[in-house]
Length: 438
Image (cartoon, rainbow, N blue to C red; front, side):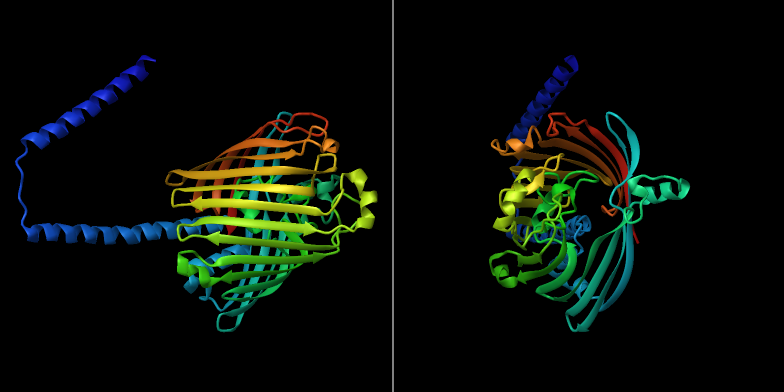
C-alpha cells in the first residue's frame, strides 16, 4: 500500500514540476522571430515528414490484413481478400497446383484427466488454372487427419476405440470445384458456408470457441444444416464494386443452396431445400459489418414425428457480426438467433440466443494475448433443454513464429456452462502448436 502511495505522490510531483517548467519557459524565454521563408521551410519539412510517415502506416495496415487473413479458415475468403486488397497478387499465378498441410496438436487438462488431442490437423491440395485472362477454374480437396489417433493405432493395433476405426481418423473437410472471375465465384461441393462469412468473425481461438454462433450445430461440422462446412451445396460469392465511390470496399453478397441433407441426431429424417444468404460491408479502415441467414426446410408432415427431439418447425439461424482490426489488435462480436438448430448434450433441439466476443492484442513483437467469451442460452419456455447452457470465457497467449500460421499457444477455458441435467462443466486448460506447411 505504501509503495502505491509513494508512486502516486511521485507521479503528482512530476506533473507539477513539468507544469512549472513549462510556465517558466513561457515567461522567461525570449521570443524568436522567424522570417516567412524560414516558416515556409519548416512547413515544407513537416509536410515531407508526414508524407514519409503515411506510407509506413499504410504498410502496417497491409501487414495487418495479411496477418488476419492467414487465420481465416475459409480459403475462398482469403482469395477474395487478395482480389480486393492485393489485386496484383490475385492474378499473379495463372497456374497453381499446391499441396499443403497443417499440424495442430494440443495437450489438455480438465478436472478429471489430462490427455493429448488433435486440434483440426489437415492435409490437402489446391489447384487453379487461368483459362482466360482473370478467369479461373479451380478445385480443392482437404482431409482432416487425427494424427495422434493414427499413432496410437500403429503402436497398439489391438485397440478397439472408436478413434482407431477405419474412416474415423481420416475424413473430408472440404471438397469442391468452381469458377472464378474478379467479381464472381461459383462453387459446387463441400465448402465453407455463406453463414460462416459472418460467424467466422469470432472463430479465432485455438482449439476452442465457436460454441454459441450456431456454426457447428448439433455436434456436427455444420455440414448437413449448412452453417459450417456445408455438405453438397451450390454456392455463389459476388463482389459489387459500386460502393467504392462512397469510401467502402466492394460489397460481399453470398448465396447457397442444399437439398435433402439428413437432420443431425434424428434417424431417417431429412431437410428439404436449405437456403443460405449473407452480406458484408467493409470500410477502408477494415471495419466490417455482416448479416447472415440460413433456413433449412422441414416438411409439415414430418413435424409430429420430430417433436420428441425438440423440433417444432424449420431449422433457422440468423447472425449479425461486427469486427475491426489494426496492426496491433483485432476485435469482433457476433449475436445469433437459433431455432430448431442447436441441441443439448442429450441431443434435444431448442430455440435460443448466442453471443460471442473475441479480441487479441500484440503485447510485444511475437507475443499476443487474446480473450473473449461464448454464451448460448435456450429460451425460458424451452423446458425440453433442462438446465443446459453454454457460458465460458477464454484467456489465450500466443507466441508467433510466422504471423498466425506457425505458433505456440496456451489458453484457459473458464467454465460456467451446464449440461441438461444441471451438472456444471469443469475448466479446460490447453497448450498446443499450430504449424502450417509449407
